[in-house]
Length: 223
Image 1 (cartoon, helix red, strand yellow):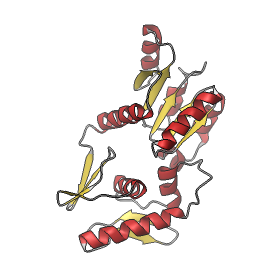
Image 2 (cartoon, rainbow, N blue to C red; image 1 turned 180 degrees about the horizontal axis):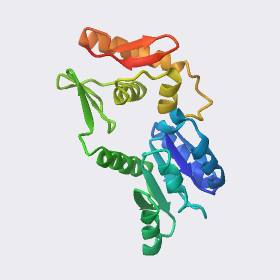
Image 3 (spheres, rainbow, N blue to C red; image 1 turned 90 degrees about the vertical axis):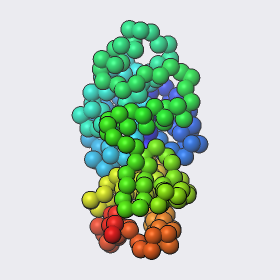
């Protein structure tokens, strides 16, 4: 999920609509409301954020520190009328990147992915057995061959792999895939996506790598 912070409703709604068209959940905050949310939100909600987009506000230079106290997700500032002084001020307060409007949402997503790769200081994929799962939006591979998946199923697999070693709930998966403020989609849709994903993996691998326990959630259990 992408979180957009801007004092202008039109800008917030515009960005969330553009990200939605790219298949990425997002939500917008007024800066005065965002500070309280980022300080009090549940860890599962914060963990669902893939990047923070900071726009126009008198609080713009204060927000990155509040974010860093809770999250290591990329923080990208969007400047309407950039100047050297403002760009340096953004970097000094802790943002990871500064972009100039207009900017396409795909560029923002690409920049966020690049920042996450630098944070990891590692490859942008995880190998589990014969399966390679990427973190940059590509389809996974099995034994070197592309294993094409619909976007939701791929993102669920990526989320499970990124949380390998611990069990995640249906709510956590839903928040990561659809966003914590999407009221138009029922949470139970996660079960349908996982069921389809498990069938495809079972057919290709010969076993089901996703372990599920009622009330406890799901985890990758690779043989």
